Length: 136
Image (cartoon, one colour):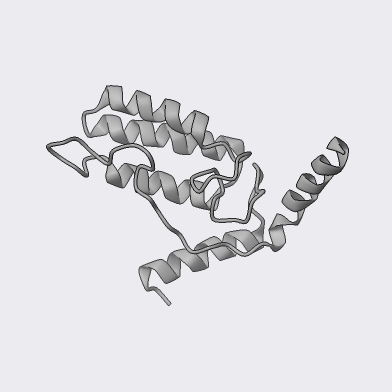
């Protein structure tokens, strides 16, 4: 039974290249505040950029780069301790192996694990970005 489950999940991720990308959405900093009490959206832009990377997914290295870019962005607004907390949270909570709404590759149907995006998938990402910005 375990082998059947594994093969089913594997076949789902192999067939993911036929999957349709959902439009980009962001929930801000997910279960974390978007800023301080004084500046309520201080690092919200950092989280939105991080959500974009998670939405499209990709390789493990791309996820790692996105997580460290989030940390650097939050440090840049002067919140080094918050940046470390956020990094720990996304490294644990952003795994693609759980069907959460904030997992790595959440724009694609679950299961979607680590892997290079195909040319067709990259085209879908590009098309979605154009639609979101209003560019034809």
